Length: 154
Image (cartoon, rainbow, N blue to C red; front, side):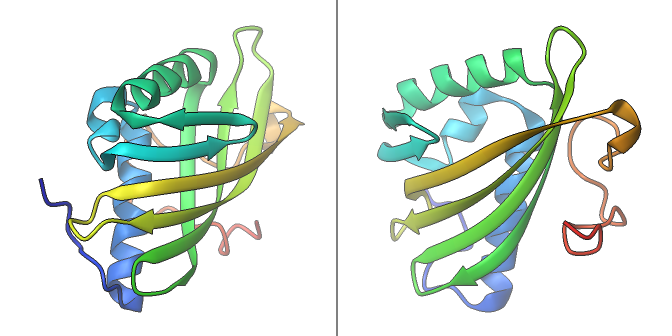
């Protein structure tokens, strides 16, 4: 299974890869998102360590059940031939209605077929009010004309 764009990355293809990841996560389909990773993909997400599609799917299922009204924006930070670093922010609310903005950085390493084989994520959560929200679009893909992180001053 090939997941273009493939390494080695250029700035343009790295940006495409970042947007594809953002779009996938905003779709909130754990099974579909897991397919963007190698079958033996290794993750560190905060203090949780995962390996493989089944663990990734289970993690994402738990995540999106807890993080309601999820909206994510990713931005390219840097890249090499088969690695990409991104920064991101996402907004969500918990079951009690408390809104959060989660900020983080990810380091990605890709296999030759374009699937991610390693994902290392560091994330912090900030409680916000509903009035402080900045990510306003219908569930799913962020519209092309919606500001990115830098445009929003994040």
